[in-house]
Image 1 (cartoon, helix red, strand yellow):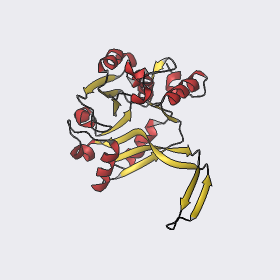
Image 2: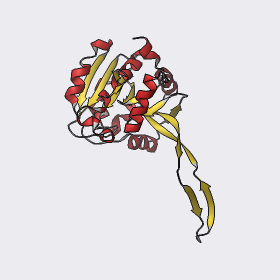
Image 3: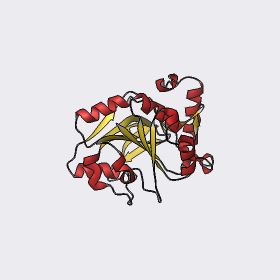
Image 4: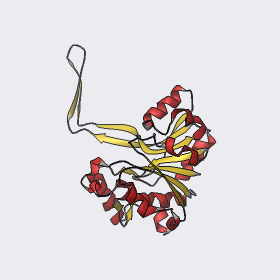
Length: 240
Protein backbone atom coordinates (compact mmCIF):
# COMPACT_ATOMS: atom_id res chain seq x y z
CA UNK A 1 0.00 0.00 0.00
CA UNK A 2 1.23 3.47 -0.94
CA UNK A 3 0.07 6.97 -0.07
CA UNK A 4 -0.10 10.30 -1.88
CA UNK A 5 0.23 13.28 0.45
CA UNK A 6 -0.81 16.73 -0.75
CA UNK A 7 1.80 19.18 0.52
CA UNK A 8 1.86 21.91 -2.12
CA UNK A 9 -0.60 24.50 -0.80
CA UNK A 10 0.32 28.01 0.30
CA UNK A 11 -1.46 27.79 3.66
CA UNK A 12 -2.79 31.33 3.34
CA UNK A 13 -5.09 31.01 6.37
CA UNK A 14 -2.03 30.51 8.56
CA UNK A 15 -0.24 33.68 7.50
CA UNK A 16 2.11 35.10 8.65
CA UNK A 17 3.58 31.75 9.77
CA UNK A 18 3.45 30.24 6.29
CA UNK A 19 5.20 33.12 4.56
CA UNK A 20 8.52 31.46 5.46
CA UNK A 21 7.60 27.82 6.10
CA UNK A 22 5.16 25.51 4.29
CA UNK A 23 2.21 24.40 6.39
CA UNK A 24 3.23 20.69 6.48
CA UNK A 25 6.44 21.76 8.25
CA UNK A 26 4.58 23.67 10.97
CA UNK A 27 5.49 22.01 14.29
CA UNK A 28 2.96 20.28 16.50
CA UNK A 29 4.86 19.71 19.73
CA UNK A 30 8.42 18.93 18.69
CA UNK A 31 7.67 17.53 15.21
CA UNK A 32 6.32 18.96 11.95
CA UNK A 33 2.74 17.91 11.30
CA UNK A 34 3.80 16.01 8.17
CA UNK A 35 6.39 14.02 10.11
CA UNK A 36 3.68 12.98 12.56
CA UNK A 37 1.56 11.84 9.64
CA UNK A 38 4.43 9.83 8.15
CA UNK A 39 4.97 8.03 11.46
CA UNK A 40 1.28 7.17 11.60
CA UNK A 41 1.35 5.83 8.06
CA UNK A 42 4.42 3.73 8.78
CA UNK A 43 2.67 2.29 11.84
CA UNK A 44 -0.19 1.31 9.50
CA UNK A 45 2.25 -0.59 7.29
CA UNK A 46 2.67 2.06 4.59
CA UNK A 47 6.34 2.48 3.75
CA UNK A 48 6.23 4.25 0.40
CA UNK A 49 4.87 7.76 -0.01
CA UNK A 50 4.64 10.32 -2.81
CA UNK A 51 4.68 13.96 -1.70
CA UNK A 52 2.95 16.38 -4.06
CA UNK A 53 4.82 19.62 -3.45
CA UNK A 54 4.68 23.15 -4.82
CA UNK A 55 4.98 26.16 -2.52
CA UNK A 56 8.41 26.22 -0.81
CA UNK A 57 9.03 22.72 -2.18
CA UNK A 58 12.79 22.96 -1.55
CA UNK A 59 12.21 23.13 2.21
CA UNK A 60 10.10 19.97 2.18
CA UNK A 61 12.67 18.15 0.06
CA UNK A 62 15.49 19.28 2.35
CA UNK A 63 13.73 18.09 5.51
CA UNK A 64 12.25 14.78 4.37
CA UNK A 65 14.79 13.73 1.75
CA UNK A 66 14.35 10.18 0.52
CA UNK A 67 12.62 9.03 3.73
CA UNK A 68 15.40 6.79 5.07
CA UNK A 69 15.31 8.62 8.39
CA UNK A 70 11.79 7.24 8.89
CA UNK A 71 12.51 3.86 7.27
CA UNK A 72 10.28 4.83 4.35
CA UNK A 73 10.66 5.60 0.65
CA UNK A 74 9.64 9.14 -0.26
CA UNK A 75 9.17 10.30 -3.85
CA UNK A 76 8.21 13.77 -5.05
CA UNK A 77 6.04 15.26 -7.76
CA UNK A 78 5.96 19.03 -8.14
CA UNK A 79 3.08 21.22 -9.25
CA UNK A 80 4.16 23.96 -11.64
CA UNK A 81 0.77 25.63 -11.06
CA UNK A 82 -1.87 24.89 -8.39
CA UNK A 83 -3.73 21.71 -9.37
CA UNK A 84 -6.34 21.60 -6.62
CA UNK A 85 -7.04 18.88 -4.05
CA UNK A 86 -7.15 16.00 -6.57
CA UNK A 87 -5.25 17.28 -9.61
CA UNK A 88 -1.84 16.14 -8.27
CA UNK A 89 -3.01 12.55 -8.66
CA UNK A 90 -2.33 12.98 -12.38
CA UNK A 91 1.34 13.68 -11.66
CA UNK A 92 1.75 10.69 -9.35
CA UNK A 93 -0.66 8.03 -10.59
CA UNK A 94 2.00 5.83 -12.19
CA UNK A 95 3.91 5.70 -8.89
CA UNK A 96 0.88 4.53 -6.90
CA UNK A 97 -0.64 1.10 -6.36
CA UNK A 98 -3.99 -0.18 -7.56
CA UNK A 99 -5.55 1.08 -4.30
CA UNK A 100 -3.87 3.96 -2.49
CA UNK A 101 -4.39 6.48 0.25
CA UNK A 102 -4.56 10.19 -0.52
CA UNK A 103 -4.54 12.81 2.20
CA UNK A 104 -3.74 16.38 3.08
CA UNK A 105 -0.30 17.03 4.52
CA UNK A 106 -1.69 18.95 7.49
CA UNK A 107 -3.95 16.17 8.78
CA UNK A 108 -4.03 15.73 12.56
CA UNK A 109 -6.09 12.70 13.49
CA UNK A 110 -6.17 9.50 15.48
CA UNK A 111 -7.92 7.63 12.64
CA UNK A 112 -6.97 3.98 12.27
CA UNK A 113 -5.81 3.98 8.65
CA UNK A 114 -5.71 0.18 8.48
CA UNK A 115 -9.45 0.03 9.20
CA UNK A 116 -10.12 2.56 6.44
CA UNK A 117 -8.04 0.53 3.99
CA UNK A 118 -9.87 -2.69 4.86
CA UNK A 119 -13.29 -0.98 4.59
CA UNK A 120 -12.46 0.29 1.11
CA UNK A 121 -10.91 -2.88 -0.26
CA UNK A 122 -13.51 -5.26 1.15
CA UNK A 123 -16.22 -3.26 -0.65
CA UNK A 124 -14.19 -3.00 -3.90
CA UNK A 125 -15.05 0.70 -4.00
CA UNK A 126 -13.78 3.25 -6.50
CA UNK A 127 -13.31 5.74 -3.68
CA UNK A 128 -13.86 5.98 0.05
CA UNK A 129 -14.06 9.33 1.82
CA UNK A 130 -13.05 9.67 5.45
CA UNK A 131 -15.76 11.75 7.16
CA UNK A 132 -16.08 13.31 10.59
CA UNK A 133 -19.09 14.56 12.53
CA UNK A 134 -18.81 18.29 13.09
CA UNK A 135 -20.94 20.59 15.23
CA UNK A 136 -21.25 24.24 14.23
CA UNK A 137 -22.69 26.62 16.82
CA UNK A 138 -24.61 29.64 15.51
CA UNK A 139 -24.26 32.71 17.71
CA UNK A 140 -27.51 34.28 16.54
CA UNK A 141 -31.20 33.51 16.56
CA UNK A 142 -32.06 31.72 13.31
CA UNK A 143 -35.39 32.87 11.86
CA UNK A 144 -37.39 31.19 9.10
CA UNK A 145 -40.38 32.72 7.35
CA UNK A 146 -43.05 31.37 5.02
CA UNK A 147 -43.74 32.64 1.49
CA UNK A 148 -45.96 35.43 2.90
CA UNK A 149 -43.22 36.65 5.24
CA UNK A 150 -44.88 35.30 8.37
CA UNK A 151 -42.77 33.78 11.11
CA UNK A 152 -42.44 30.01 10.67
CA UNK A 153 -39.69 29.28 13.15
CA UNK A 154 -37.29 30.93 15.58
CA UNK A 155 -34.36 28.91 16.90
CA UNK A 156 -32.15 30.73 19.38
CA UNK A 157 -28.43 30.02 18.89
CA UNK A 158 -28.82 26.52 17.44
CA UNK A 159 -26.12 23.95 16.85
CA UNK A 160 -25.96 22.45 13.37
CA UNK A 161 -24.51 19.02 12.73
CA UNK A 162 -22.72 17.94 9.56
CA UNK A 163 -20.51 15.18 8.27
CA UNK A 164 -17.42 16.83 6.80
CA UNK A 165 -14.58 15.47 4.70
CA UNK A 166 -11.44 14.82 6.74
CA UNK A 167 -9.18 15.26 3.73
CA UNK A 168 -8.30 11.56 3.63
CA UNK A 169 -9.38 9.18 0.86
CA UNK A 170 -8.87 5.66 -0.39
CA UNK A 171 -8.85 5.57 -4.18
CA UNK A 172 -8.79 2.89 -6.86
CA UNK A 173 -6.37 3.78 -9.63
CA UNK A 174 -8.26 2.03 -12.42
CA UNK A 175 -11.52 3.77 -11.52
CA UNK A 176 -10.14 7.30 -11.28
CA UNK A 177 -7.63 7.23 -14.13
CA UNK A 178 -10.09 8.54 -16.78
CA UNK A 179 -10.74 11.66 -14.71
CA UNK A 180 -7.22 12.84 -13.86
CA UNK A 181 -4.47 14.34 -16.00
CA UNK A 182 -1.02 15.75 -15.14
CA UNK A 183 -1.92 19.29 -16.22
CA UNK A 184 -5.54 20.09 -15.34
CA UNK A 185 -6.80 21.39 -12.02
CA UNK A 186 -9.22 19.09 -10.22
CA UNK A 187 -10.67 19.27 -6.71
CA UNK A 188 -11.62 16.21 -4.69
CA UNK A 189 -15.37 17.00 -4.52
CA UNK A 190 -15.49 17.24 -8.31
CA UNK A 191 -13.67 13.92 -8.67
CA UNK A 192 -16.14 12.25 -6.29
CA UNK A 193 -19.10 13.66 -8.21
CA UNK A 194 -17.63 12.48 -11.52
CA UNK A 195 -17.20 8.98 -10.14
CA UNK A 196 -20.82 8.90 -8.94
CA UNK A 197 -22.03 10.19 -12.33
CA UNK A 198 -20.06 7.33 -13.90
CA UNK A 199 -21.96 4.84 -11.67
CA UNK A 200 -18.85 4.06 -9.65
CA UNK A 201 -19.11 3.07 -5.98
CA UNK A 202 -18.10 5.94 -3.67
CA UNK A 203 -18.31 5.15 0.04
CA UNK A 204 -18.09 7.21 3.21
CA UNK A 205 -16.12 5.97 6.20
CA UNK A 206 -16.75 7.39 9.66
CA UNK A 207 -14.75 6.35 12.70
CA UNK A 208 -14.73 7.41 16.32
CA UNK A 209 -11.47 9.36 16.15
CA UNK A 210 -10.03 12.77 16.83
CA UNK A 211 -9.65 15.10 13.85
CA UNK A 212 -8.52 18.69 13.55
CA UNK A 213 -7.92 20.90 10.54
CA UNK A 214 -4.98 23.11 11.55
CA UNK A 215 -5.59 25.60 8.74
CA UNK A 216 -6.61 28.44 11.07
CA UNK A 217 -4.33 30.05 13.71
CA UNK A 218 -6.76 29.22 16.53
CA UNK A 219 -6.86 25.54 15.50
CA UNK A 220 -3.08 25.44 15.20
CA UNK A 221 -2.76 26.82 18.73
CA UNK A 222 -5.29 24.25 19.99
CA UNK A 223 -3.37 21.39 18.38
CA UNK A 224 -0.17 22.42 20.14
CA UNK A 225 -1.97 22.84 23.45
CA UNK A 226 -3.50 19.35 23.21
CA UNK A 227 -0.13 17.83 22.33
CA UNK A 228 1.81 19.66 25.05
CA UNK A 229 -0.71 18.81 27.78
CA UNK A 230 -0.95 15.17 26.77
CA UNK A 231 -4.67 15.40 25.95
CA UNK A 232 -4.01 14.12 22.42
CA UNK A 233 -2.47 10.65 22.28
CA UNK A 234 -0.92 9.42 19.04
CA UNK A 235 0.34 5.85 19.58
CA UNK A 236 2.69 6.03 16.57
CA UNK A 237 4.70 8.72 18.36
CA UNK A 238 5.06 6.69 21.54
CA UNK A 239 7.03 4.07 19.61
CA UNK A 240 9.73 6.57 18.59
